[in-house]
Length: 165
Image 1 (cartoon, rainbow, N blue to C red):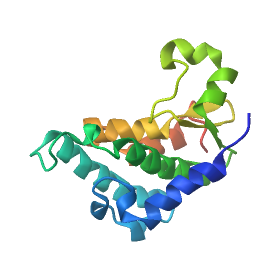
Image 2 (image 1 turned 90 degrees about the vertical axis):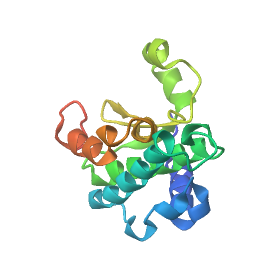
Image 3 (image 1 turned 30 degrees about the vertical axis):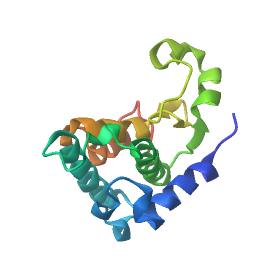
Image 4 (image 1 turned 90 degrees about the horizontal axis):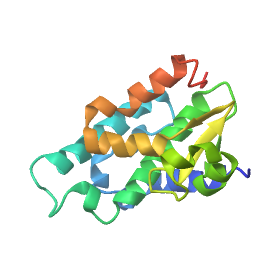
C-alpha cells in the first residue's frame, strides 16, 4: 500500500490555516493546535460546540451533519487527531486511502463496505493496527462529550490492542 501522509497533512494545514475551512471555524482555537495531546482539549471544545449545534438550539437552518461542509470538517479535524496519534506514537503509523486499505484487508468489507465515507476516506494503519480517527470525530459531533477525542487518544496509548505506544 502507498502511504498518503502528505495528502492528509494538506487537510490538517487547511484546518490550522483557514477558519473558513470547517463549519463554525471561529469556535476553534487554532493557535493551540501544536500536535500535542494537550491540544486535543481545543478540538474537544470545538466538537462540543458542533454537537450543541447538532442537538441544541438551531443556530443553523438544519443540523450540523446536514450542512454543506460537514464532510470536510470531519476529514480535516479527524486528520488532525490522527496526526496527534501518529506523532505521539513510538511506533510507525501511516495514512492510507480507504480504497487501497480495504483491498488489502477484504475481511473488513462486510462490516465497512467497500466504498469510503467521509469518516473512513483515510485510515491510520501500522504495527498490525488500524485506527479510524475521522470516524471518532464524526461520533463526537453526533454523540457529544461521551465520544471525546482526548479520551480516544489516551485509551489507545495504554491499550495493547491500540498499539499506539
